[in-house]
Amino acid sequence: MRRFYAILIAAALVYMLISFISTVPSYGKADLKERVSDAFLSKSVNAQNTKAWMEGKAIHRQPAKEIYGKKVKEEGSANVVTSIVVNYRSFDTLGEVTVLFTAALGVGLILGGSRRKQYGREANFVLKTSTGILVPLIIMFGAYIFVHGHLTPGGGFPGGTIIAMASLLLYLSDEKFFLSKASTGALEGSMGGTYVIIGLLGLAIGGYFLYNFLPNGVVGNLVSAGIVPLVYVAIGLKVGAELSGLVTDLHSEKEG
Amino acid sequence: MVFWISAILIGIGVYGLLTQKNLFKQLISLSIIDTAVNIFIIAVGYVDNGKAPIYSKAVPKFMEGAFVDPLPQALVLTAIVIGVGVLALGASLLVKVKEKHSSIDVENMKGVGE
Image (cartoon, rainbow over all chains, first blue to last red; front, side, top):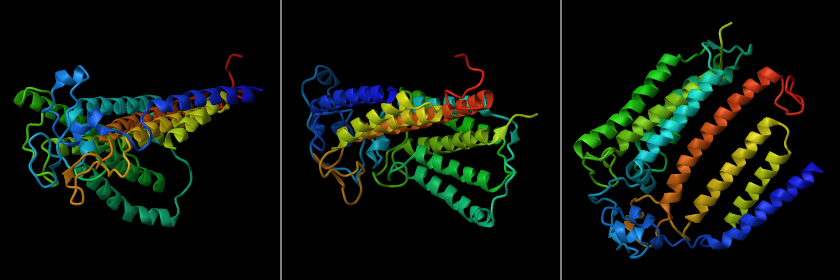
């Protein structure tokens, strides 16, 4: 009987959601000219008339222009998603990093311990040998992902997660492996501090928190986009250390 | 229709939350709803034949309709990270529940008032 009512409630909710679908533009027909995304894509947010935007009139059409391989004054990363996440809305990302930190802190408080949990089973030969070969490659791939965050898909969060998976592999293959709280905590804290210090430097030099105070360079080069790669390296190492600490918490137990 | 898929996934998640007595299955139901909302937000920004919003040698120019909307993708990146945090914290709480009450099934928990 309970399942029947559950199906009824779920079906009513689905019906309600489907009836709302007609109010959003149909799939594949999104009109970017009506959205702020047009300004993000053409890297001309500073040129917008914000007052007209807020009154809901004067949708500013952006002219077609060459961006790849050129010097763009406002923003220099080839990946537009990265330019939004780490440059235009970097303050949001600082909050996001804080949320992840709080979650890792909560897991540490609930499960954390000072000793490695013993499962009493030995990893087999294939896992042990392949771990030695794969771990450096996985760490290198993670570093590649976050260093190229402003050029290719990816960035600090996926790169950091890949690095944490390397430590998970070490935990699975070796019963005695244990990362100390001091090492992951030190990396995590210093990298979180680096992000805030970059923001405060922007405040000192340009007058805004997280202001992009380095030259933008040519769109598409590895060394371009000002502070974006620096911030993404900091985020990548921080997320990697944080999730490694989380994996450590899951595999540890309290003394006695 | 991608919108329909996300609506149906939300329905599945709500059904799981209402019927399942295993707390871990309820956590997974929450995770399914999270994914469904992410799919919906991404789908709202899709443009027919639009490329991924990355400038490269193949797509060097800004033009109308050349790229999909990058803003929902940036928002979903945030949402995914927060989803991971919620899932990790919830799973660690479930480990503690299992240690204290010997089960994560609502009906078999010991020492819980009726």
